[in-house]
Length: 125
Image 1: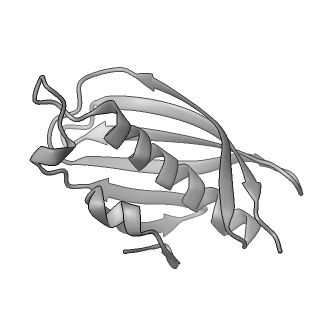
Image 2: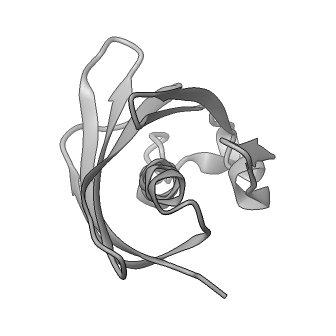
C-alpha cells in the first residue's frame, strides 16, 4: 500500500489508507477488520498506535524528503476505538537530525480516541 508516495506494506494489513495531505498535515483512515480487535471487541491499542505512527511518520517523511525512523513515541488513549478511525499527523518542529511530530486519531463521530507525540530521525544514505 502506498501512503503519501511511500510503500508501507504493514499499513495495508492494518486497513490504513491515504486521504492526502494539506499544508503539511497528513490525513489517514483506518477501516479495521475483526482481526484488529482485542478481547473486548474494540480496536486493539497496537492497531491504533500503528495508525498514529504512520500518520506521524508520513508527516515527518514529507518534511525531511527522506525515509524516517521512529525513535520515540508516546500515546494517550482517551476513549475506546470502534469502527473506522481517521488520523492527522503534523510536524511540530524539524531540525536536521530529528523531527518532532504529533498525531490525533478520531472516531467517525469526531470523538478523539488517542493522541500521540513522536520523534523521528531521517534515514539519509
